[in-house]
Structures are given as C-alpha cells and as structure tokens.
Length: 330
Image (cartoon, rainbow, N blue to C red; front, side, top):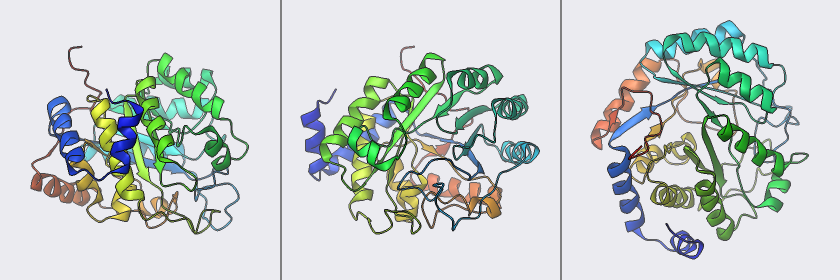
C-alpha cells in the first residue's frame, strides 16, 4: 500500500516503470480479458450546473433529448444481440425519469441475462433501494474531486457531503460501486489527487473511472485546457491499479478523445474495461459532457470488430462474462 508521499512522488515524476508495474499487477490480478460495457446515454437533460460539463442546465446551445422507455429497452437489446454482457444506462440528473419508470426499464433489460449499471447521479436512498430490487447490479457515481473547496467551486448548489452519503448508501445496498475523478481541473493540486486515490481505497470502490478534463466551449471552463491532463490522468489510473489490484478500471473515452490511441495506452497502463457507446448516433452526438467525443457510430457490430482487432494487437481479448469485480481468494 502506497502512502500519500509515495503517491505524490509518482505523480510529480516521470517513471515509465509506473505504467509497466500497473500493467503487470493488472495481468496478475484480473488477467488479459477486456470487459465491454455497452453505454446508452438515454437523456441529456440535467438539473445541475457543474462548471465543466456541457450538459449543465444553463447551457442553452445544446439540443436536449429524452429517450422513451421502449426506445431505451430496444437499444439495450441491440447491444445484447451484438454480444455485450453489461449495459450501462447513463443520463443527466433528471427528475423526469422517476423511480417507477426506471424500475420498469431495469426489469425489462434484466430479462436478457446481462449485468446492468446505472449512472444517473444523486438519488434518495429509497430510489437506490428500488433500483437494486428491480435488478440493477452496479452504480457509477463519480466524486470528481475530494477537495471540498474545489468540489464546491465546480458544483454550484450541490453538496459534497450528500455525494459521499450517496456513495455510502450504494455500498451498503450491495451495489458494485464505481466512482472516479476528473484530472486537470483548474485549481486541482497534486496533493488533492493523492487524496482522491486514497479515497478510492478507503471506500473500497469496485470500479474507478479516471478521465482527463476536456474543456467544453459552452461552459465557464472553456478556456482552461490543461496540456498535462492526459499524462496525469494516466498516472492516477496506474497508481489506482497498484493500490487496488482487483478492481475494474475503464480506459475512458475521454482519453481516446485527446489521443487517438488513448484507450490502448490506458489498457497497457492498468485498465481492463472499455465502455463503447451503443446509443444511436443522433442522440450520442448530443450527449456532450465534453466536445469531439470519440466512438460515436451507428454500426456497433463494425465498431466491435475494429475494437477486437486493436485489442488483439496488444494480446488482449474481449471477455465473454459479465465482468464482475473478481476478488482473489474470495
């Protein structure tokens, strides 16, 4: 287990052995299989005003959409037919999708023997409980930063304490719980990134998503590009693998959006999950948390075959199971 000073040292120095070590730990603990999660971004309406996000409520330059329940289920079936063993339902924080509506969607998708992940933000405990009872297996709720002052600055009218409570509720309800951070935010310190990594361990999160910050032109942070965000995010990801050997770590789409080989690089630095977008392109292109998002294509079969070839080039293979967290010795 690395301590805070050791983590800071890794973050501030360029050591190629960091990535090699993370890759070996990944191989030894979760193997060479890559778990694919079919991502459906089913609505881009959001009541929040996070400074970094293109979906923020005050952005008037975005074409908003909400998919109907039957459309979400049909897109999920398309992904399942293409071979995806996990479906991820993601949206902005939107009260239009009530507990009952979402439970109906969950129940219908779970008929097809797949794992189901939700990424829909902060909800009351009773909602999380109902989703779990309806069949949801996993929940992704990124903390984005554990620096309370930075969190408050980035998330107007939102509560850091409530975010933590939601994560604890998810763990207590038995979800495989995912969280993560944005790397490269203005005002973010190396020390706070080290605290983020230690937080992942303390929470005992099952999946960690780490993405470089990409400025969106219709947000207050439009001019705050950090040229070091990609490399720093890669370091955070690698260190996270070292201290949490058996968790699932996605090679994020944001990495691919900055670097055309970003996901492959991430997969060689500790990652073992990819989350391809299986939504219809007409909707996916409007789910702009950040601009120029990679991987938007209606032909999900073709995209999957291209991905298989890329993975084979680094001797990695698509898993045929649901990709639960594998805890060695359990």
